[in-house]
Image (cartoon, rainbow, N blue to C red):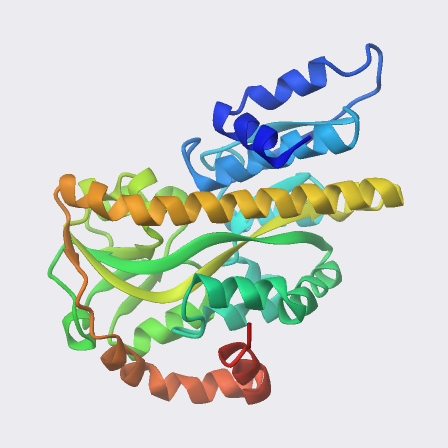
Length: 331
């Protein structure tokens, strides 16, 4: 099936890929894969999940179909990773935020300002560095099929505009359960408070935290503009995504089926990249219309300088050679 045909399936919504299963041979034994993510049905994760389902059904000749559980119906991202790890969930489309608790090598991408732009990020992840880290997942009883994309993370809050590090001091900011993120925010004088994404909106609404940080698309999809006044385009961390598969499923596949699953994962990952980038471009104008004050003249150099003391710890944790290999990657 051509890529354009698959994209039409993705954009048609979650029900379209089921039609592929219905056209398979009558009586063919089918395996329904349970696929989950933690955000809305109008999101890059949903598009990725639908794309994966469509591609699997197409390349495996209808043997596999997918049933998608969006909106955190099966749990927050950490719980989804645990479910895949235990074999109680087949596929999860997640950000790498909580994955570092399972595969510590992924935490290197959470170093602030390490990845400069989308081209740099994609080149690193698509190359040998990205593959070396994907190869570490089986040690934690996980299969990582491909790197997707959550996007560049930006800071929002309900208190004041943030242009420089001193503006952020004292803010209580929701973070993922990710030690690298939390250490970086502490260095800025921010109080990081880890809260599952599924609990974020009420935490902001009731003042449990002052703000949060996420890619533009997520901010729009989760309607955080209703409980956040200020958006600062800090772009402090590039947040990859990952398509996770249970080893319980993987170990039962033939070599041809494994190739099919890898192909489906790579296709789904590319769809998340396209959608998240589109959402980032269009989302700023939408957020302005919805009443958010957007700070674009962020003093990036000042933020990098304020975070400089944390780099010594990152070097101890990840190694200077590995950090430099990513920062200076040629493409």
